[in-house]
Picture 1 (cartoon, rainbow, N blue to C red):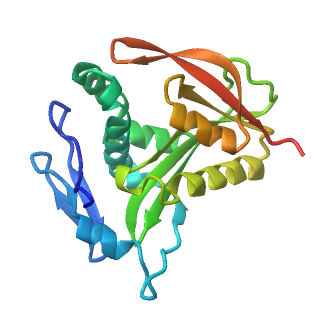
Picture 2 (cartoon, rainbow, N blue to C red; picture 1 turned 120 degrees about the horizontal axis):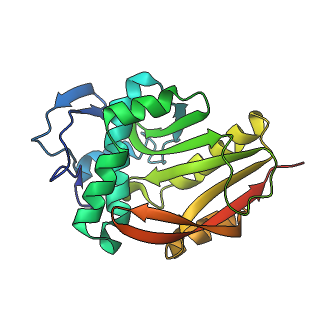
Length: 225
């Protein structure tokens, strides 16, 4: 049985949340826990013919700042809490996710946010940034894929491939000649995923999560024709 999807709130500075469903957007406060029940998930992933519905990828805008803060906290926490302390996670999330922080990122002319939706529900997102060079990256005009995440219930359901495909297309359409990213050296599943899309390890760099200093691989995909 699928477990409910929960937004992690404990010990993180409070923000308000908006929940999207087929009936539209509704507001909850920071003392509540957001849940998408498994029955909602089961209904939403199929169309009337029993076929999996197409994933919709759209650009984020300033109205999505709160949604991206919420989605970013949730997906990052679920992805890495197993390997990090609660204190380090809380520190990192507090420093990198809030409505104000994501608003600033959206307004950055070099940044692009892509939101994956299924039946109106946000199920993942990606953040790209132009004019960003990483260690070992050979491309002369690189674009960085800074974040790409899916909510846990949709891992293996096509969110990652859909976002990766659109990220590569976005980089090409904007005239960049390579796409690069950083991935934790111990995240073997993610590394295999990126390798399937043609990215190769080209370097290393330090990533600080709370007080924990970690090593990331730099991976690059050439977009030169």
